[in-house]
Image (cartoon, rainbow, N blue to C red; front, side, top):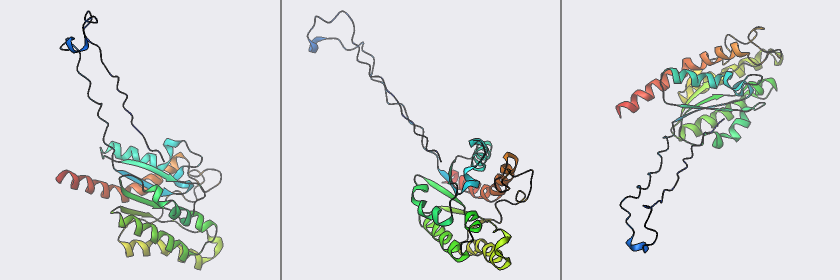
Length: 235
């Protein structure tokens, strides 16, 4: 995820009026010397929306600007909503991996955290109870910092049986109710299972699929940022 840095370079102007070099320093006329320039103002950093996820978030197989967090940034810009989206997606990450790097991900002025983890937990058959504990800690630690959380649901593959899939599915809705967070019921809704919307691996969305994923997240995210912008304007 990118962290833009802005550096202002200032040239020091110390020229004095010519033709006075023979005078002592204390007798030179400095009235014609140009004033020292003021430091260039740095643009104020914008509040951040961090998307914490795995390869689906990182945009594996896609150009950087086609990953769904970049598409969310485009939506925000079009709506003139003053946020920077940080893509904190790491390929292969599980919910435990996301939890382990949470402090790094929440660096800076983070207002919203989109949690999009669990796909690799499901692929590896990790215990749904472990998934729930990890996601709960992520939510609790973000909320303790005053950060609004959006939770994106994921589904487990069917090869681990119906009971596993049901328990896995229920993790997200249970956490959304418990912590009162916005829920994207299924991150890949409208994309999963489609040959035309997924790359050859059948897991990662194509460019067109990523746009649908962005729409899924935007549905939950937009009311939060619009409300926050309105509140800030009133304050």
